[in-house]
Length: 497
Image (tube, rainbow, N blue to C red):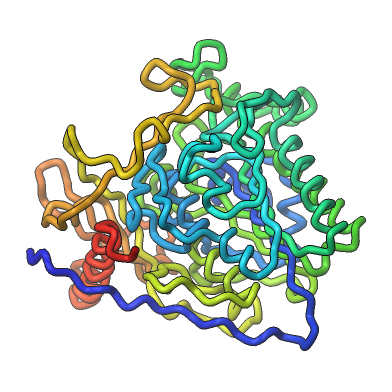
């Protein structure tokens, strides 16, 4: 394969004029659950979960029924929200791989439009300490109370890069209390705000308040007949526990997160801010093994079938979304960045952007997405001695968490220079998702290339492979995917900077 690459033509919409002369800038709140899959809401038909606030949001706002995470794992998806770009473009391949300092972040965009911005909760695209070149402040946030990775009850968090402090209480409520304080200060200063709230729930290990655990004491007995692997809260190492107990705790975390979101919505209403505040909730990837019951989709966290990448998505904005709607248009976390750019009247950065602004969808003007969504688990192993993109000392995290890794209870991030495109770098599970069809490509254990084509409208569980019936469509979608991969690898070399 030739090493010369070309830039894939990225399709996006330029900022539209403001809808009404003199209309005040909308406030923006971006909420994200950790490992919260599509089916884990009552409004999506979950048989046990209590999520009254998310249900109310889905019933009153814009419900995105075909919303996807840019990656089937967490750090890359979070990078897509910050940049609007697929995370492989800047080396955030999988958990604990950092973003790059040259990336242009969503808070830098809103700052240019006069917004105040704050980040609260899980960061996970680099350390949050003050000297990290990829902390929230370096990415444009005016303030942050954040963690390098995930957290449970009584979390350790760093305020504006300072030493970790322990905060007593339920973690979702703690983040919302801080968000409310931040919003109150912005309101007093008559300043529009961007609040990014990334919860630690419901990522394992699980722990819940008694009032939430009590809601799930009657799960079916057959869940207790098997055990699942997860992290021990006592040792930080892997353990096996009865599945019914694990589900009870996981569901308790989701309910507590749901309740905290309700506290934020109530505050916005009380302060007269709710009408012109866009609140967007989504998950960061599909459900892991420790929480996966009878999923309606194929796969789970970590793979590019829908079980790994389809997540809940809801947008509330009473001033512009006056009547409830459900949308089956495909959309993805990479769309958040260009949507915010258009919302605040700022141009997109002069580099490939993978997301599209969803304002046409919010305005009811879109029936189909004009370009496919691409997914790709980059599998290259960087050899020992690879050149670090950031000083390794600056990549060491400080905020402790329960789960031990490599003998420590903090996280160390990585990112490496990528100088030359090689044929093997195009490998790894990948997918192209259009309005109706989805192409999935991966290598089997014997090295054979497997291509599967699904009609995801008629076959949302991805069971019936149509690749043999529609070879021309497979060829077209594979060519689109390959062009996008070339563009992505070109970005990875640093060409965009």
